[in-house]
Image (tube, rainbow, N blue to C red):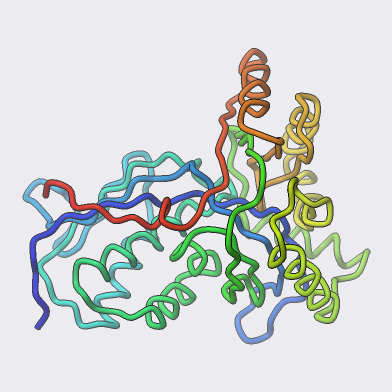
Length: 313
C-alpha cells in the first residue's frame, strides 16, 4: 500500500527543438531509426497538473486526462498507467490537467513533454520510482520521452532514447513559425527512407562520428553562437517534399534575419535561430505583419524546467 496525501502538484512541460537530427538505418529489433540528435528545451511549454480526481472530471473510472482541444490516445495518461503498474502505486484515481501551449503535431515533442512531466509529478507525489526506473518507463513510452523526463540540453543517440546530458543551453533565441497544418511523423520518415534509397543511408559508423564531433562541441566551453555544424536535419527534404509550405517557411525565416533556419524535427513547424531575444522579437513582429503565426522562445534547462509546486487540489 502507498500513502495518498491528496496533493495536487504542477510543473512545466517544455517544448524541445532538434538543433541536429542525423538519421541512420532502421533497427531490426524495434523498427526505429537510429539517429544522432541535439535536443534543446525551450521556455515555450505546457502546464501539467496532477491532482486527485473529482466528480465531474469526465471519462471512465480510474485516472483521467483533461486536455481541451486534444483528443484520442494521450501519452500522459499512458505514462501514469505505466508508473502505477511499475511501482504499485495504488492511490485513488488522479486527474491530469494539461494547458496546451506547445503546438500539436508540430515536431516539438509536446506529447512526450507532457508524459515526462507526469512521470516526474507521480514520483514526487508518491515517493516511489527511482531515476533508473523513470528512465526505463520513459524509454518504453517513446524515443523523445527520456529527454523530456529531465529537460534541458542533451545529445540523443540510439533511437534518441540514449542520452548524453550537457550543462548549459544553446546560445541565442528561437523563433517558432507554425505552419497551421499537421504532418505525420511516420509519413515523413517513410518519405525520408524513399529518398534515401536513391542517395544512400548514413551508416552506423557515420552516426558514431557525428556523435563524437557533437559531443566535443557541446561538452567544452559554451559557444558564443550556434555552431554551423549543428544545424543539420536529415528529415527536412522529406518534410518539404510532403508539405512545400514548410520549405517556404524556412525561407521566410531567413528573410527576416535568422542566422540559421530549419525544419523542427519532422515538421511542419520551422525554427529560426537568432543572436538574442531582441532580434528574434523584431523578426516575429515582421512575420506578424504578414499574417504568420510565430513566437519567440529561449533555450532553457535545469531548475527552470524541473520545479514542482503544490497547487490547490
